[in-house]
Structures are given as C-alpha cells and as structure tokens.
Amino acid sequence: MRELYWLQNDLRLQDNPGLLAHTAASELLLVYIWQEPRPWCNLRGIGKQRQRVILEHLQDLREQLAALGQDLLFLAGQPETLLPELVRQYRIDRVGTSRCPGVYEAQQLERVRERLPVPLQVHGGNTLFNRQQLPFALEDLPRQFTPFRRAVEALPVDAPASAPTQLPPPPGGLAFPALPASPVAPHTALPLRGGSAAGQRRLAQFTFGEQAISRYKLTRNDLDPLAGSSTLSPWLAGGALSAREVAHTVYRFEQTHAANESTQWLIFELLWREFFHWRALHDRHLLFRFDGLGTGRNNRFCTFDPRAFARWCQGDTDFPLVNALQRQLLATGWMSNRGRQISASCLIHELGLDWRYGAAFFEKHLIDYDVGSNYGNWQYIAGVGCDPRGGRRFHQEKQAAEHDPDGLFTTKWGGHRPKQPLYVTDAADWPLPPDTAGNGHEPD
Image (cartoon, rainbow, N blue to C red; front, top):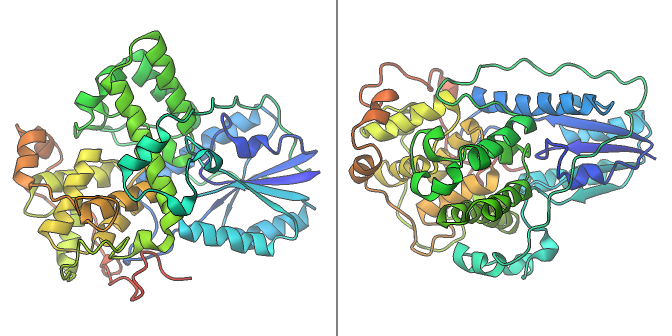
C-alpha cells in the first residue's frame, strides 16, 4: 500500500506512534504543510524567532530522514486542498496524522477527512496519557487542575517508542524543495536551536549533565531562561521531544541519582501541560471567548485602548519589569513562566484590556507556543478559566522586588527607558476588536 503521513506537531522520529503506524507501507510520502495563522486581534503571521525554531525542527527531521532513505515534502497552503491532490496524484491508499488540540485544528481535520478519497487515520497527540487511559470521559474532565492531577498522577506513563531503523521509500519521481531560509539567528541571550537532536541534548544536559533538575523547584521562577528553567518547552511544543520522553528521563534520573521535590516538580509541570491539552479538546470555542468557561467571576466592563495595547506589546508601559519582559519576548521568542504571569496580569488588571489580545500576541511570538497552555494560562490569570480563586492579580512592585531586586534583568532588557518602538511600526499592526461572536479566532 502507498501511504501518506501528514506531520504536524510531531516533528521527530523517536516516540512517534503515528509515524510508526505507517512503516509497513510499500511507499510512504511524508508531508509537512506550512500554514500562516489566520489574523485575529489584527495580529498577522508569526514572529521571526518562532518561525526560525519551526524551520530548524523541520531541517533536523529532514536530516534524520535522509539517513533512512526518506525525505520530507514541504508545502505551503491549506491541507484540505493540498492533501487530496497528493492522494490522487500519487495514488495513495491511506493517510495518517496526529491530532492537535485546538478547535480550529479539529475542524480543519474534519474538512480534510471529508475531502479525502481514502481513509484518514488520526493518532493521539504529544501527551503523557492517551484518552483510553484517562479515568473519566472527556465530557467529565475536571474543571480545576488539582482534581485532575489527583486522578491521573498514579497512572503509568508508557515507555517512549524507539525511532524506526528503516522506513519505506517515498514515491518515485517526487521532487523535494528546500526549506525556506531562516529569517533570523538565535538571540545570544537564548542560543537554542530547534530540532529533535538539540532537544535531546538539552534534556540530557539539564538532567544528567548539569543535574539542574535537582534544583528546579528553587530556580524555576528565574527570569533569565538558562538560569533555572528547563527550557524544554520549545521542543515539546513542536513535537521535537515527546512528553513521555521527558517523563521517563526524569524517572531514570530519580532511580540513578535522587528523587526530590524538584524532580517531582518537573513531572508536576508536565501534568499541567497535560491538563491544558485535554481542557483545550473539551472546551473548544470556549478557550477563546472573553468570558471563557462562563464562571461569572470576571464580569467587569473591559474597554479597549489600542495605544495601551501597543505600548504593552513593545515594552513601553509604566512598569519597568513588564517592559523588560516584553522586550525579552520580542528579541528571543521566550519568557519565563513567572514573567508570563507578571506580564499577563499587567495587561488584564493594570491596563484593563481584553485578555485575548495578550494571548494572541504571545501566540505570535512564543517559540514554545501551545494552544492549550497559552490560552488556558491567560484564562487562569483573567479569572475566566480553571482557577478556583477567580483570577490572579500580581502586585507589580512586589514582583519586581522579589524577582529582580537589583534591577539587573530590567536594565539588561532596557525596561526603564525604552529607546524606540520594537513592534508597532505600521498602521496594519494596530489591533481591531475581536469578532462580535467572542471567538478568539475568526469564525470559519
């Protein structure tokens, strides 16, 4: 049988069940389709650092495939148009892909299924557990994290599958165009490269190399990326690392070295990621609505001031630490978990802006953008999501005193006196209100 596998957020060979399910084909066409995100909140495209990391994931995958006599067909456009054409042109008998959690991604998957003349097999996403392992139906998913954690933390995490040692060849006569050139180099403050090989090196360095995992709970709130964070999220988000891979590396470290609160905390963070993944599948459009899950906790009137939003975007607010964090994001494509909470709280509670604009800006620029974690965390801070306390407001001066007491981070990123705009440079970049239906993304 001739088969096609459409790679999405699973850009790796190891522990890729979807890809492994197609290794018995006579010929196998591997495809990646570059899709420009739909503009909403009048934010267009993706940031240069995020684009760079995705291209590096793809280039690394191509190099690994070449060693197995395979290649990756890179196309740009809409999957519901391109995939049926490929199926007809190369007489494909079966198509496979892995599921992405976003509601619009799910709708697109159904459009692809409807237009394909052959069966579509959809595999699970990059999660610790598959749906059959969960001790509840998806419609009964706990709304808060703690009951979810208590229900799943004792479940076994399957061992990651090895990378295939051989793959079927691609169809004959197929040309594989080169990938687009990277638009930017890694920033010196965060010289991380995309790709599965780089992700595995970072995982080994953080655990068995530096053994920084043994101090993770104490350092994870550092604002500089390599000072305390694992920085594994860019590879997890793109699927260059699997969540099971990370979990089992932690388990091995605990067995051969020591288990403590810090090693357990990294598993705890993986469970947060897992929670938001399943919430995104459950909540669908609610993930993008202003009132979120409809908890009624955040009913205050919210106006929108384009100038205030533009100043927040470019790091030109009245809060120096927020300015520094925003400038770090624009330069590197990354911000610490604590930094994201501080910056999000500023936009929502100090500037009084619609939380979805901030979430969309993060979506544009974060090199570790993940739909469930990003929008779930923004809802959490806004008080319209999974937080039982009804939102979190971070005292800006207190946060600066605790996490940047000497002002070194703020000075490093020019938070005190912004010298020039970094983001809003064209009228097209000024935001418009979201659609009146309240969806985060434009309606189909």
